[in-house]
Length: 407
Image (cartoon, rainbow, N blue to C red; front, side):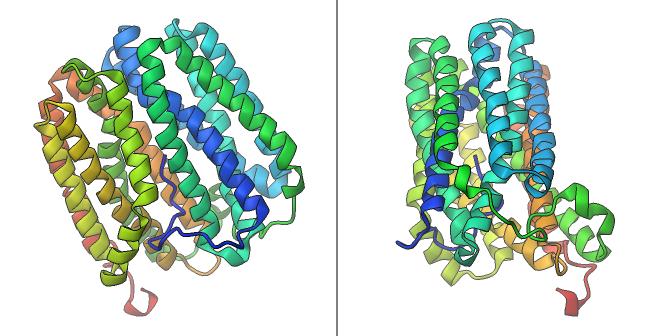
């Protein structure tokens, strides 16, 4: 669950963090914990329980992420034009009602697909509001406001994935019930605590892609952003295999479901606890380009190790290395996007980066599923190792068309 808003700096939050930021962080942890019961296990459930191919599961997850992207765009518009508080309530009501129906009809693939798409749309509407509200409520906090939500996200991933694996090993039915229950808790929390957050926002900071794309002036910067984001897309296509094809692969070689979920718990806790390492590294390696090079090399190493993993311990090693790599790459991309952004276009550039990440999560399961279905998991790993060289190229040359005084 990684946001394009977190920075390369430590995510230590000061003691004077406003009350509403704490409430946003608590709400985020509740919501992500509920979602983390389900999202790591979607492919496993469709493939192992419903008997569908990995390619089919990839199509379902692609539709889910596509709905999320649409929800993101609509949520951004509603943040600017409507009430953020009411938008979160309506989006959560849609997600909650869909989650309840999913818990009732998850054994039918048509119902499973339909309600998963609705959940993707509802949460897609909600999440941009959460980050935008953090920036509006605590503008003087800078990136610390976004980082507080980011830490809360990964805490939710760790807790949800840890508990979800054990719950699923008892019965998948409980996973869907737990997911719906946490949506209900989140809605109640929002209704009680969020009403006072409806306040004036900075319209330039939070304008959406739909609003700004027609007024984009700096073509060279935008082309540079597209080239840079191409590498980011590739990384996300590869990364998403951990949630889909690699997840199914762990089941095929006999790794228990609760242990697979533990991998995501390790990922989430390492991101939260590993910020001193990030701070130490980025203070010594200040170039975002070099951070991407090093991070991408670490990511490539993690897939090389996963390729030969046959037991849980080696997957733990691979996930640990993967997490170290993502902690370097994920913050560097939006940082470079901020540097590329012309005056008054930072919001659009960050939105573009977020959309590219969602696009990778949308395409990755489909591409990976088709390769594994038609060939095997080894071919997929070889393909990943090859395409992971693309970010080195895009990072090296993305700014080649920019004038020196504009870079």
